[in-house]
Length: 497
Ligand SMILES: *[C@@H]1O[C@H](CO)[C@@H](O)[C@H](O)[C@H]1NC(C)=O
Ligand SMILES: *[C@@H]1O[C@H](CO)[C@@H](O)[C@H](O)[C@H]1NC(C)=O
Ligand SMILES: *[C@@H]1O[C@H](CO)[C@@H](O)[C@H](O)[C@H]1NC(C)=O
Ligand SMILES: *[C@@H]1O[C@H](CO)[C@@H](O)[C@H](O)[C@H]1NC(C)=O
Ligand SMILES: *[C@@H]1O[C@H](CO)[C@@H](O)[C@H](O)[C@H]1NC(C)=O
Ligand SMILES: *[C@@H]1O[C@H](CO)[C@@H](O)[C@H](O)[C@H]1NC(C)=O
Ligand SMILES: *[C@@H]1O[C@H](CO)[C@@H](O)[C@H](O)[C@H]1NC(C)=O
Ligand SMILES: *[C@@H]1O[C@H](CO)[C@@H](O)[C@H](O)[C@H]1NC(C)=O
Ligand SMILES: *[C@@H]1O[C@H](CO)[C@@H](O)[C@H](O)[C@H]1NC(C)=O
Ligand SMILES: *[C@@H]1O[C@H](CO)[C@@H](O)[C@H](O)[C@H]1NC(C)=O
Image (cartoon, rainbow, N blue to C red; front, side):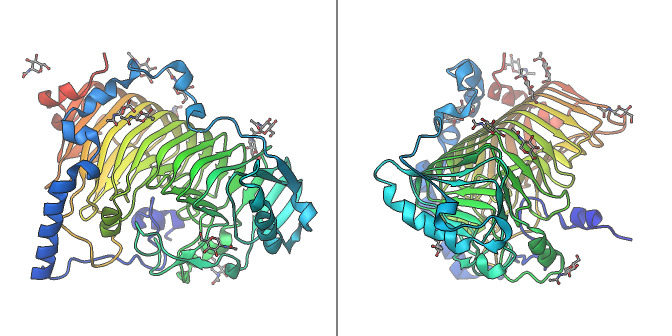
């Protein structure tokens, strides 16, 4: 009998939202003269606007000087997110949801109460800000929006419970960099906690819980009866100065924390939990964001613990909003069918200057995974990965292409992603079942892949690296890497010593 896990493996659902209900895959339709013209125009404008589309790293041709970052200016004090968002500010007005008539009995719907509370507190934005406290209790609510200069504070024992009425998660417009809902055409359910165009927002507490009660949504997915793309637990759009800390998030319907088109985002001291087979319950997915710091999080879920993204095929290319200056540090956890940290597969706006360090991943399908495809366009550049410990991770390091997961027929098969400058060091993996699998794209090989001090222990002796269309350099790597990583030219990319 086929188990759900087998099904998950076959569906290759990681990171996206496909699978259940059928992925709508784009096929390249006829190569019409019009499309040719559009491509030529795109190529021409690409020449002109290279500087805005590409990070400095790809233009100067000096990407890996970057890797030298260790000495140049990263001090011990910078090993915290403090530079991205300081300590949470004291707010002038502090009120409890009870003052608005909230009932924390686990049954009464508080949707209107939360909406009313935020509407009321909005007025203090320019005069010292406000904080809404949620005391101990079980507070059922549908989706509500946050406001600027605002803190949502969950006291110890406070549990927000996501409404089981789908209409309490209304449909909103699709994201412009996705062009449609990630799972279904058209709009998408709004997140439980939502914000758009905000500044200075804190979601914190004394380890209170936000429980999306996602089972209802996962069942719709499994049963192939989902009508619109599932909502996130927390989504902030077009916002800056965001802190999400010291909480437990459970059972999100879909990706758990989704900052998109944001800057200066800190996510720290979080526990994020979902059943290990709950579909697409990614932990934290920074998407077309800059200056993001994620640290000290424990995550176990049915999809990537952290996935860095930047839009989907032609929609992401058009929007050209990269994810950059991202730190992921001291994250630990497990996801049996997906990866510790994923980059992509939606990366069409570009991803650069990402540091991933001090990760501990166990019983997972992959440790570090880079995913892209033809049609994505964009780039992945200057990715620095170090001090990763893995236990019983099937494929410790995996680069892959070609999941044939496109938004619609309008994707451009000539839009090839550029992957350049990925440095991986100080990795130890115990009891992996496979050596690294590094699969680049035929007409767009991945370059500057650099590995140092990578030990994959406890592999069967027949396990060998599988590399295609990649080049780079390896030193102190065990077992012996594929010849593609012996490219002497590329040694200049790595400046560890
Ligand atoms: C490349 O990454 C390193 C390490 O994160 C960083 O110090 C450097 O500034 C980055 N360079 C560019 C051009 O983004
Ligand atoms: C919340 O914000 C979204 C736009 O970001 C809007 O569509 C929705 O109507 C708002 N919801 C409420 C209850 O105000
Ligand atoms: C985090 O929550 C715990 C209670 O679980 C509390 O003791 C601690 O002070 C909180 N930390 C911060 C920084 O608020
Ligand atoms: C917060 O609660 C979760 C779930 O109960 C627990 O696993 C975690 O250790 C707690 N975190 C802190 C800092 O107390
Ligand atoms: C969906 O499937 C589950 C079993 O996976 C079943 O218990 C449930 O009743 C179904 N729900 C709907 C809405 O069809
Ligand atoms: C790279 O990102 C780090 C934060 O991770 C930031 O401090 C640094 O300035 C960035 N480098 C460039 C060149 O933007
Ligand atoms: C490596 O990461 C682990 C967490 O996985 C951390 O405890 C340790 O201090 C890190 N080592 C260094 C040298 O930073
Ligand atoms: C190699 O990596 C391991 C695991 O992170 C670390 O403990 C060790 O110190 C590293 N060795 C060197 C020479 O950096
Ligand atoms: C690796 O596997 C061996 C044999 O199954 C076992 O004895 C050992 O404890 C495992 N090590 C880890 C770190 O899981
Ligand atoms: C490899 O590169 C180094 C400098 O990075 C150079 O000294 C050496 O001669 C090169 N070896 C070969 C075989 O080209």
